[in-house]
Length: 375
Image 1 (cartoon, rainbow, N blue to C red):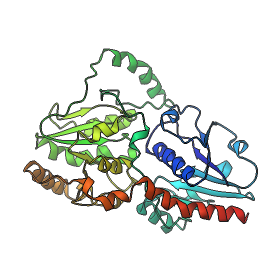
Image 2 (cartoon, rainbow, N blue to C red):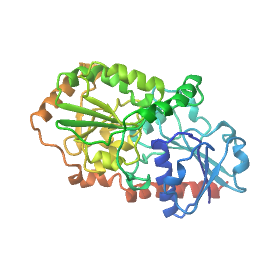
Image 3 (spheres, one colour):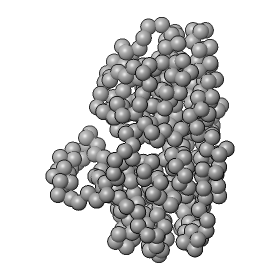
Image 4 (cartoon, one colour):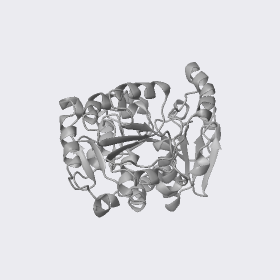
């Protein structure tokens, strides 16, 4: 069986980590990959792709890079339009890394199979009448495959979008500013340390989250907020505005980091964003695998990835109560409420092991083989 995966993202994020461990899992099942990637994506070399993954940088004419004969097309996100046509001997499929709830489900039209990364995503696909695979694939805490080493030093918190004139200009000016800025090494401080370890993208909704939570944090100066990640100009600007009521020094930005395992282990809790635009949250799975509990809104997909009381705490959506339940939880933690120990929740963690991921893929591969054998 010939498999072609498509991931044309120029920027590194959770979907690219997912692509890498998917290639490794498929390789274990005897399926090699031809991976079509964006020519500007320079991060693939550090993601430990298996030897039987052939990486091809493409910009146009995707169809010209397909092998002859029956082929399983597997896109990360909806298939590009030029690959959706009805051709004999093609299985047109995609992994849905985003929920369709609140989005236009027509993006997944003309697909034969769609594999959801969570039950939340699957339910949205099914409600839209799309061919969703019944079992969510979930994900893996792939911490040892991203060049995880070295000190954690402050870096730029911006991820410039070179398609925008403003970002291109600021991206040219920033290196000069960074050269004269201090770049301290991270060290945790006294107090209760909450951490964000994520790209600062719109789907996380951090500005909207902190519009409700910032007053709660400001009233509790013993809580420290450490933010590891970068984002576009508007995302960082809006997050700054949402956090502006916090006392100086209560929040620190550290920029994008590769040593995420080293970060998780120095946090008291990982703090998630808002839920409904989130598909899974690999950072939640990773943190728990490192023994760091998670604090998240009590809603899917977080109800699938956090075991309340065992691997973290779930609290009421702050848009419903202006952060009152979050504040109650913070008071309990500051008063000494015992910290969950995710490493003891073996059954929960096993759900997100590489071995479990391979087993969830096994029927997917068998189905693809069967579909192509009838082509």
